Length: 122
Length: 107
Image (spheres, rainbow over the protein chains, first blue to last red):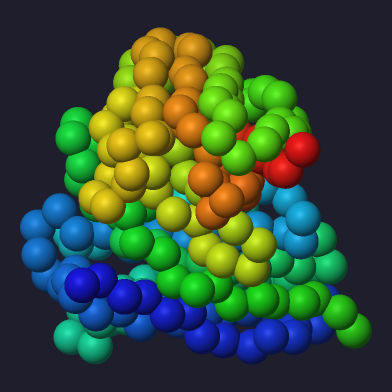
């Protein structure tokens, strides 16, 4: 059974850097094909993909946020860390990490964390 | 970027009725499309992948169809627990994109 859990601050000030950690179990990022991604959701709005990282350390970023995002993995401790710099009030959202699994002919988010709300305010 | 458009924005139906949700892509995504269900305060749940394959544990009343640019999620007979927001997501082109969602609420 795969589980994921996000952790990090619930409140950050404008211009600060947000650091979120996804701690997971039930799979390993040392396994070929494994991947974890991050998705955010502003209050009352739709989902937005941010980034993900593969077992071989390949990384993909949203082109709109690429300059502000960094995703890294800590394979021995089953963690993935996302940092987002220069936070602004428009970045207020619930952030989810999710397991990105190959199903059929492609990869999809088949297991999700509960999400962690982040508010950007002074 | 592949833009996904979902219609209708809101679908008001009664339990037992059939729900038909649409997702249209701005360019072909072949059949690399998924559907997710999200209830208030919960994370999304994968329902359908590769346009028409049900994910593990998803009831048979959920079905997906389509390819290229036009896709449909059908719920054959709505159960009380099916009232939620449904998102489509494409995986064919980078970046990964989600649609704006369709809310299925009680009429």
